[in-house]
Amino acid sequence: MRPTEWRGTLALLLWLALLLAPALAAAAPRIGVVTMEPGGIFFERFGHNALLVQDDATGTATSYNFGYFDMDEPGFFGNFVRGHMQYWLVALPLDEDLARYAQTGRGVGVQWLDLAPEAATALAAALAENARPENAQYRYDYYTSNCSTKVRDAIDQALGGALQPQLSGRSQGNTYRSESVRLASPAPWMAVGFHLGLGGFADRPLSRWDESFIPMRLRDALREVKLADGRPLVASEQALLPHRVAPAPAEAPRLRTGALFAGVVLAGLALWSARRAPRALAAGALLFWTLAGLAGTVMALIWLATDHVAGHGNQNLLLLSPLCLFLLPGGWAKLRGREPSPRFRWLLWTVAGSAALAGFLKFLPFLVQENVEWVLLLLPLHWALLRTFDPRR
Image 1 (cartoon, rainbow, N blue to C red):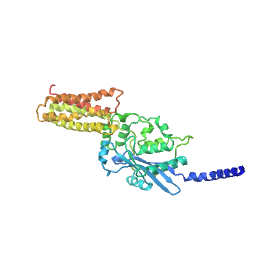
Image 2: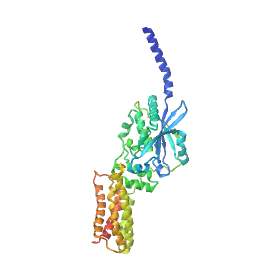
Image 3: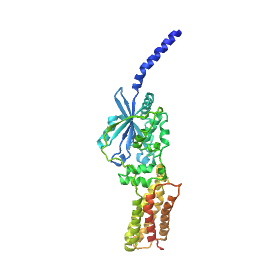
Image 4: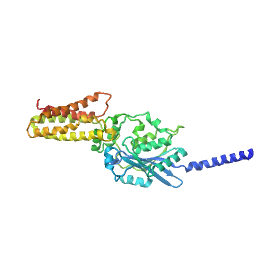
């Protein structure tokens, strides 16, 4: 081919590329982050999210949802207890995914991302591939690998790793504990369970990246993310369903004053009952030691026998010790007006000393755990029971 013919062919190819570029860009899917607000039932308290792939050419809108699990899976409950939970990525039509949220009054919104056509196409293809049955399952963790972190990681990958650096250096002072207790607080038993069962792992300040385990935090963080050319990542936001449930609390409840007051009252009641109603005190002590021992046993098993890392090394074991169960024979003897065995005194001092150690640890900066409320509540009671039940006092 002569040079003039090469130049003509090249010019034709360039002209065709320019002509087809808008059509190719238009063929790329739109990518959105769908955020579902918290619901009224305890397992809905943390909200939810998904990635939306909308193909304008075909009119299809597919929700890629990382929040599915199968309770009929062999060994599901055993895996749940041991922290070996398996979740699934499921692709389903957006209308089908939204139906249950509409029924329960949970608000839903979508953030449309301003991704380059090739990035949007690659992300859609990766989601479709990962949603295949042989690829869909993943190891779930409440804090580090859940429905929201999976959405976050997929966006980060589509941006070539540009999302994490923008979110990793900033912290609002939130922790896994504060976020868990905040969102669970409308269900008090759930908030108490989180506060009691979480260890020091849950108390380090989180970056915006880490906070994104909460879908609403990820939504807020994405509003601040910029692309390489300075444009915002979120091109627009759209409400899909109105929110008719009470909004999530803005912050975790403050409990220290109430805990101190309750602890002093309980200790005072124990001291008063020692003189006026000793058998009633023994009955109350039996109830307390039973609950404390069972709670401590559960916390010890979480630490020693499960992969629930957030519950490992829990200092509340010093306040609610499994040893409390061994105090029950002595408490029963006191209830019947008899003297307990000599071992009872040793156990009583050990349990009270452990509680005192939990209080001392609050002064050590290298063993951080936000359990001051539990120290203020339980340490006075342990001291009062020691004072009233020590047979040698």
